[in-house]
Length: 103
Image (cartoon, rainbow, N blue to C red):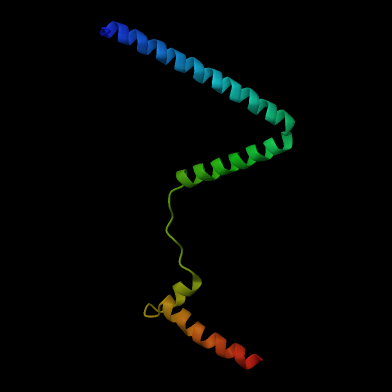
């Protein structure tokens, strides 16, 4: 059974090997991406623009404090005892009848 120094040395070798493999894969992916950008400059530019726009929206949404929802004109002038559901029900009952009479 290996002692702790031998195990530590073995783990260091494995970690170094994994690190080197990761660097190699990242370098390969970088060169492949670079070649794709050279072959498709317009597509690459549009993708970059879209990604930048999305990141900008996300940062803005996260950095902007939440504002309370503004009340609509109807909500500001409607009596408190009338609800949106009551208005929607009244419109649903009234509109079909008025449309039938137009034809």
